[in-house]
Length: 229
Image 1 (spheres, helix red, strand yellow):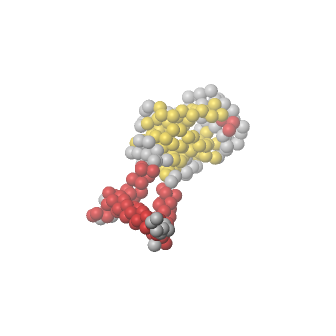
Image 2: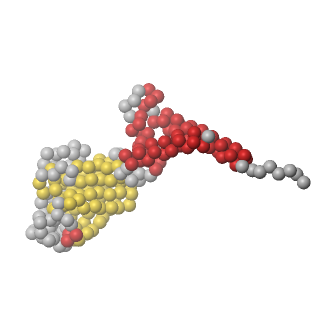
């Protein structure tokens, strides 16, 4: 009996683990690049808008470059909601000397639980930097990311920065994302994610009930019979 119920339970755990690994980390990315944005210095900032399809936005990586030089000075990464003049949500400063040439630089911030369905804008600035001593960010001139655009010196352009946005939703939010993907594009009842949620809950409830009954019976059979005195 234990083997009968252990096998489907183990299978269910494997399925859940596989889907969890497949869905996390959730990302939105644009990694194409063919030209630098220009030196980030003085009043010249470099930014990008992007659409967030998931909750839990908590990290953004940007492909930076140093022109193969040793750069110094402070650089600041800023994140705002909506257009470039939106409310500032995060601000992270770092030393330009720590930037690796032609490598993605990671910026982490507290998770934004309600980020799904919103547009965000991030930008890099270094007001104290000067020409010849400033980093840059890679862009692609073919506009490969239609859901956003780059801003160079505060002006929108057809280019897109090379970036990756990461999301870390809660387990309940992740389950909702999985159910939505499972139901997407299917006809009738099969296209309703509530149907899969009910089926999953019923399966777990039945499995838990049978396991509880089995354990109760096994514990009862294990007791020794003793005559009354």
